[in-house]
Image (cartoon, rainbow, N blue to C red):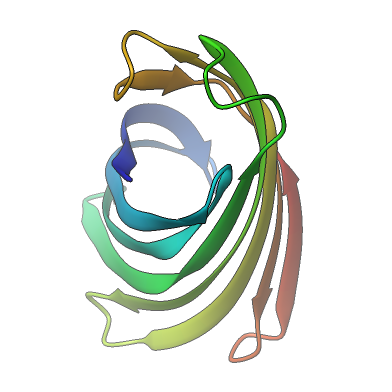
Length: 145
């Protein structure tokens, strides 16, 4: 199994009463193996870059991560539409142009349908819940997306 996610983001916002604009790119390739019918496991990487300009200054950050995932398909394997549930873990390292660096642990639980165009290629629509814990900054975040 080979796949991944990609995200490009452009943003305008107000930050401490200053107008700010930002750009983000986030790529998450993955590769997996079907150990038995309907059950796969593998590795997912993540690479992200973020740039925010405000009040004459520029803040840049990068993120690199890797971790395992497990996925189970609920319906028979020959269905053109199937449902799956997935759990994943990633260890991430954040670093910024200020020299600061910290690490985070992310646990993600996903579920949704996959629609196959043929026996090998499909598109997925997921609902996700993410637990993000950063011990370096003593922060926790729960995200639903």
